[in-house]
Image 1 (cartoon, helix red, strand yellow):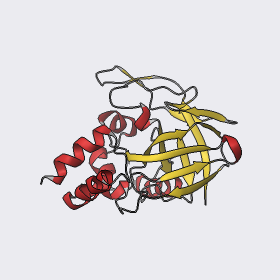
Image 2 (cartoon, one colour):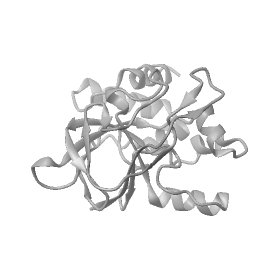
Image 3 (cartoon, helix red, strand yellow):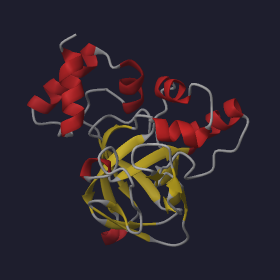
Length: 215
């Protein structure tokens, strides 16, 4: 059983050199409970809605354990929200989570249920925010990208809530491994699991998986 350390949402839109001109990557922890529905946390936004947000990227979770490793490597603090995440967790193997893994966050009738859809793919906006050398490459190969989540059941979450893994598809392909390696064998495993009805691949994930599987 893990713990939700922080719930983060956009603090302010910042100017950005990308095509959109602004970014909503500046997420910061909020006090008290936050309602989460199919498109994400109440009060949160995405500036680039082509690449971010939507039902298959409703929330972004990042593990405190991975943040601590980055803090040591970068010699700087990595507070909740710095990576643009909505949920900072502890005691949950976020990067080892299988595509299709399901979690419950909170307790009682208003608990949130989510499904892991894909790893976070680092982009130029993220690199500009961090200001670290070769950041996109380093983050992608780190094995700790964090996970995007699809909302299965709307709920209300707050810092301190328990995070429970409800189920795993059993295919063994974790989000961290998939982004770092994109192995054809893993791609074929994901497609086979989806064909058997054990996995609902997000459309943009399926597109990549199908390409990789043909290598």
